Image 1: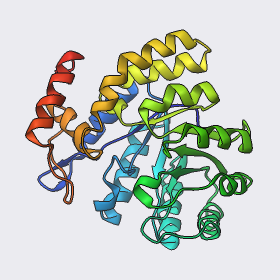
Image 2 (image 1 turned 180 degrees about the horizontal axis):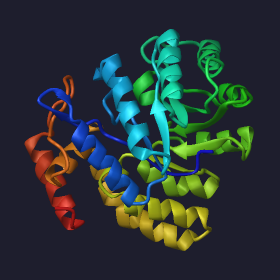
Image 3 (image 1 turned 120 degrees about the vertical axis):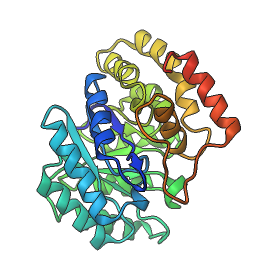
Length: 290
């Protein structure tokens, strides 16, 4: 189900509103670059600052524009189980292929609470569910024993792993088996995770170079490890640049420098610092993106 390079797509803004025209153009750019699918309304899409109407609209636009050419994994997570249920049901209704559920943040649930949360959302819909493990943003790590329990729920079919621990990722693959798809939540970890049996990446850098990360993932899926390793190092510096400040500040700055979107954020996110802006510009220039 979840195999390939998926773009965690940004939500462009213009004059305080979602820039739907720029959003559609980004989708077309990604499809032309060979990506496998999109994740609208994830962290990179600034989902915490989208109203419910905006959130639902962004997913609807993505599904409509993709028109079945690639997959759409809708970001529908929340720290309220009922809210996550409602968002996920809407994603299913408008035709999303799957939903991504981040761990409930701020609440700091127990592992039994985590299990019950994800189970309740999964059982409220028929579409496949991908979990999202990112302790750095949620204060909780989905431990491997809990992940194994969750993998037995029929429509929980994988995880976006951003724990930062290759040991944890390896153990998840071992415990949950080959039918449970483990995707990297960090571009820089894609190659090593896929070497262990991971199926791909939900990527930030594919917003600006969809072709390069797609090629890396395809090489790994085709067993061309040497070719994939070369592509890993080719894109490595650019991947690092996407995190010189909090995501998605650098990637939106990059897209603005490339003339694809306005350099507009919603507070509490703010523009890249002048020093880092110059660093990013130099790296983009090095990659021939300006």
